[in-house]
Amino acid sequence: MTTHREPLGSVLETVGETPLVRVQASPEEVPVYAKLESFNPGASVKDRIGKYMLERMLERGELDPGGTVIEPTAGNTGIGLAVAAGQLDLEAVFVVPEGFSVEKQRLMRALGAEVINTPTAEGMGFAIQRAHELADELDNAAVPQQFANPLNVEAHYETTGPECYEALEGRVGAVVVGCGTGGTLMGMGQYAREQHPDTLVIAVEPEGSIFREFLDRDIEEGEYKTEGIGTHDTSTNELFDPELVDDVYAISDRDVHQEMQRLAAEEGQLVASSAAANSVAARRVARAIRDGELEAPHDAVVTVFPDSSERYLSKGLYGSFEEWTG
Image (cartoon, rainbow, N blue to C red):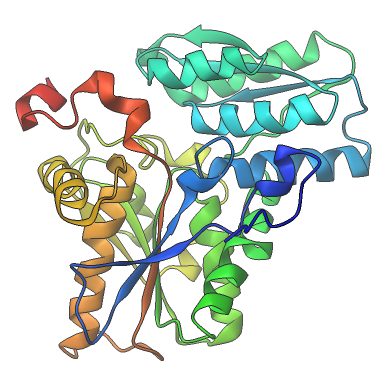
């Protein structure tokens, strides 16, 4: 964890080195540990790729200082990119489907970014298309495109994965992480497999999402309330490598809602729906390892709590299940 024992010159220097904290409800024999990414300056895991991608793009000449970064995003990536852009002399424009967290969009604007909304019914594919159209209209503009940019994976390979292994002295048996773009799991999973080839790599998605199609599963697509992970269009998920993944766990909205409330009431963890899905899945994996149903090289599971529940309070996540999903 960043100690702040010395003065720092920029908020970018506080990105990463977040706490790794035990999920107390996990088995004693196979504990689950979660990276608390709300400790980043923009309060989510996406601060990592915001900083990493823009710094690499500037180094490569894909953007010049004073240029414009344009990104299709549901929110947290926009905040992470906006934090970084403001410190790296870049303008930021975000294309956000309507219906996503109002809090996130307000924060993006507060950080100096322009937010352009697209119809929710058109999906993320349309937002991606619109972002590229806007970039073509401007000089010195680029779309990092978190859904396809290998720098997304590289950021987690270089930072999140090594931080977990350092904290646990290399004794990681499984990596269990939700997939939206796939960048977090792919980066952590690649790093984990290099440390031990038998490390379990488990993807997490909401019930109704279709990542399991990558594993040739017959599934029923449907709507889900869990935000930040899942997909209805696998053609946009260019980073997801099914060869790296041992399994995909689908978590119901009802289980997610119960876990959000349990984590807050019992563990003091004010986290949102994707973190709750990760917690449910990681604890299932840990129990399976404990019971001998899964084999892992070490008796510890790592996951990620991507952000805080505070960005979603307007959606009633701490009320009844019907209030949250209604």
